[in-house]
Length: 303
Image 1 (cartoon, rainbow, N blue to C red):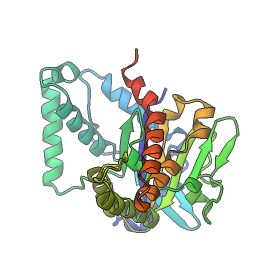
Image 2 (cartoon, one colour; image 1 turned 120 degrees about the horizontal axis):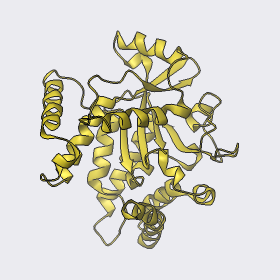
Image 3 (spheres, one colour; image 1 turned 30 degrees about the vertical axis):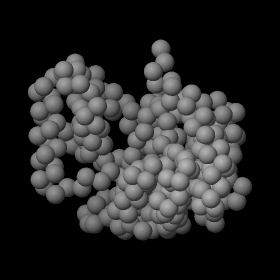
Image 4 (spheres, rainbow, N blue to C red; image 1 turned 90 degrees about the vertical axis):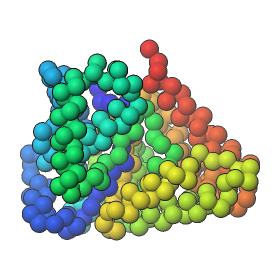
């Protein structure tokens, strides 16, 4: 069973990586031993569980992962490094911020926490990147994550051979997420777009929210979160690809729910209505989006 989490990933052209990483990732993309996309989440999850059930637990691996998600479009190879060690440090830092100090030792002994902090500080002092290629959200997809995409960039695979693509897929099938190089038999819902489109849409949404929100209009998109998303996207190569993956959330949702999910379209309609000053339509679309995801988020506290 995969974790009930969604993922926002950036795939950079392999040429954007400095040597020797460029050569290593190129060879990795052609390797038959690397975890294929259909099993990548499962492999990541198994490795994490092995660390957490160890005695004592290991909140972060000792070495950075040498694995990545791979996409290919024509002669171009796109790489999204797992960055498991960095992501684990960032996640553990968030965990400690949100957990009462007296409860943290129940999950990890003080010595483990001290080691994690020491390794993380050493990493930062060395000037290593603090920018993960993958963002994770448990139990829901943050509303801002729908902004970079268009309905036509969707690919839904239900695990029984049924495929539901956007009505007007982009020219490159890999950008639609359903090309022969990325198709998987597993249950999946993903969106993929070009970085230029993602940045343009986020910048447009930010402009609309800044100029329209405050006069009685209400949307689910916070200015601060849009700014944070825009900054994150701006740190990658301009010819990258951006992918929204519903991940393990698809196992919480039935086929009918997934086919009917119009979160990306509703977000776009809400923003367009807000820009035109049609507050009622903007609120209606925002409410519809919240109502769709509220029961899913509620499952986090269900027993």
